[in-house]
Length: 165
Image (cartoon, rainbow, N blue to C red; front, side, top):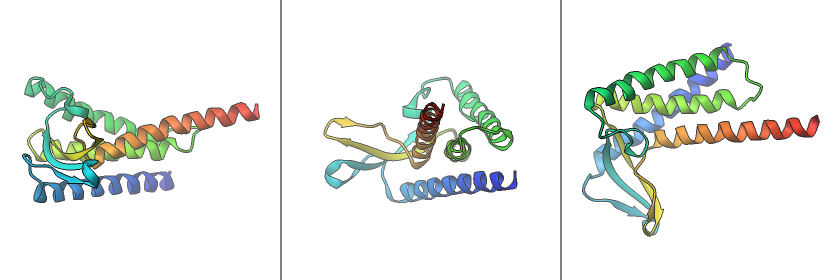
């Protein structure tokens, strides 16, 4: 249990630290009105305040409803995932680190909401020409990477089980 707690806390602190550091740099050096283009425009850096969830989903909800869902609801979900990581015995060894990445990204975005009056700092945009992502942050990368790791781990575990059965 101690090893698992150390693994979870190491991933969580690393995710929060990296995300908060990049957001601090973005708030200091980027503008909301002008994008900085890198790599021929494939990477654009521009400060954005995201009052919603992923891709600003829910940003137009009433402020009290949005706050309840995106602060209290998310905090509750993160605590449940953390407890699950501590007490579960998953058959897939990637579950705990993957969920720790999701929790780390979620905690960092929750910190933003609590410190910045309900919004999350976003600043990254990727794409080629007119085909672009929404604006996101490093916490979102950790969340999506954790989800992809969960899916890949499940796929690999099931594939390995089929070969041995």
